[in-house]
Length: 274
Image 1 (cartoon, rainbow, N blue to C red):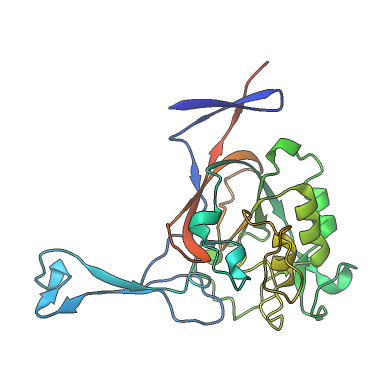
Image 2: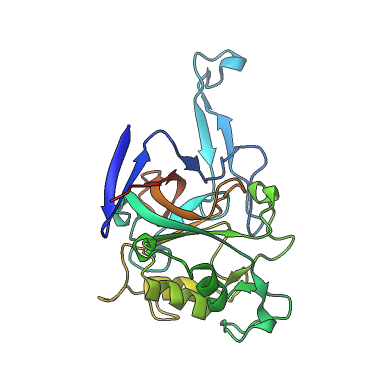
């Protein structure tokens, strides 16, 4: 099915069966990305009173119990409830279904070589995404596609699909970079990193706080907090997908929780002559 929509004065079309899936498939009991060396996502056949939920073991059907840590085991989308005492849920806070989106590729830089800041203070080995890097990547950006921003970091190694992030600390966002994205009007941020913040930051999560407009060190969503914004982490964007404008369908499991496993789909667009 081909659909048509308009942004500003420009018409675009997309095909509903032509899309890229930029999630990392979660292989229970198999290779999967991991941060903080948490328990791996796993599944096992349910067994009780002689019932076995495994056809290979004589059961009539497959019936498994699964366990996972949503924030650490794979592609997930989180809401403001990640920071607040109040239990906001992603199932309620994600209100957009088809979202104009921009995909950009950027190379994180050595944090000590840039004047951008982070709290706690930058360390010598840190790499981050700076405001200048984002500005340069978005210099030809079409403003109508800033509701969602998808960031592919370079090098774009396939090992992101199963990376153990405690072996080498990943890049993060400088505070100025995150403030720039808020100013740009980004409501949905998708990254191929395990977090927008540094792995060990004394639990401050200041980049998250800036994105949702919650005062640093606080856990209350005041009237000016950005309740409906989302962050999606641990995506993977293959090299064959070109930078540019897309339509994003951010699919999530309907968890009543601050985060849920997600499956972001992006649809290539055709620009129509007016």
